[in-house]
Length: 304
Image 1 (spheres, rainbow, N blue to C red):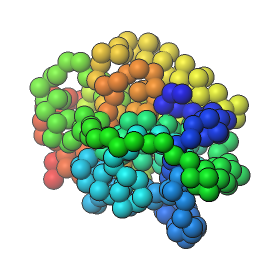
Image 2: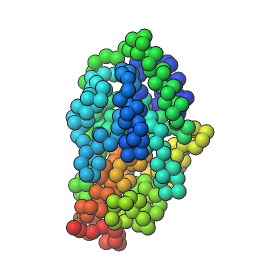
Image 3: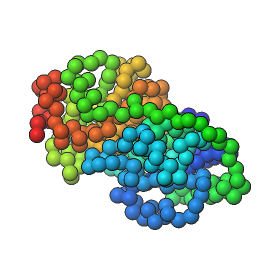
Image 4: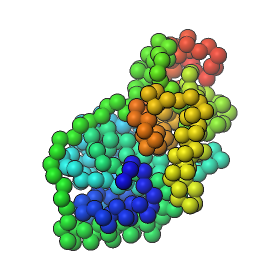
């Protein structure tokens, strides 16, 4: 199966394959009760990961790949296995006029891919709930009871190309580089500078050369048709004349929505897609004189 799975496809894969780890992603900021629940019981095929614990520093950026590997090892995910991973979350996040799903699990997906894990499947479905979670736990518990597992040791290949730093993005903008498209997946109001989107973000606006592709417009509806959301995104790319050879650099406020859109892009075959991890939060904090020189018409940026 592919990168993105519906709820039913995830259940089918679990039944078909003997060695799959399920990762339930959550955020204690949104689901404090999940913290205590995640600590209950030991299941070698089921892990709970608090996304807040894999982000670092005041900007909530992801650590370097080698640090992520060590972190995942402490969380019970070995760094030398071919085991497939299915990751999901049940968090709903307001995104302008829309509700975004799978942002939290997409963030952990990005971290796993950076660390070098190969077969990571992201469940993107509008119907993810506690019932689905309990079913996954029951199925993986049965696997554990029967000692099922066929993974073999392998050497992970970390992938640092999935992340773009503030310095690199500044150089791209200043140098007028070709072949990249900077995509702002925040709400239209955030992109237009009408709101910051966050209580702790002081300045509104967007980054020079950015184009708006709103994450909220590419959600999976109640029918669970992932293909429909992907088709809409591909049609948008066609209208924008975005080619698969382009390097797509996604950003949002702090990285969650951008991680989701990066995953959708990879599912469509845009394999050079990556994330400017600091997002608008970092950009407006640091400012960028180089970017201001490149696009004087933007008034959102500033120097401090």
